[in-house]
Length: 134
Image 1 (cartoon, one colour):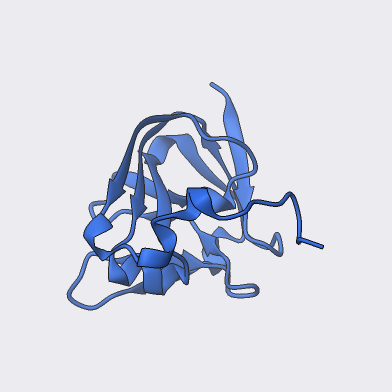
Image 2 (tube, rainbow, N blue to C red):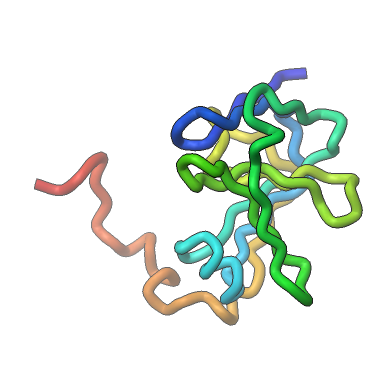
């Protein structure tokens, strides 16, 4: 099985995971937008057995929102989002942006689009650049 590596921005936390993700959720709910600071959270779900911490796994900090099934794990040094264990302990939830490579995903879903901000619903019409525009 092919594996992908992933890490936080500073590299203190790193991991590898089998590149066979069951689901990817692009969630635009208000809580996911707030916890990521973006238009949506992009999280991949995979079995725990295909996941392995390479460094910093014991240092990861996890925030769990009281009364909701919303969590975020992050590197204590740079604050980047890193994987966390699902509430029932059967899945690892992997922030797609932490991967170093393209994930293979069986099913993708956009969720809570009713809460999507209007500025993010027309991104395909925004002028695109390979880097900062000159």
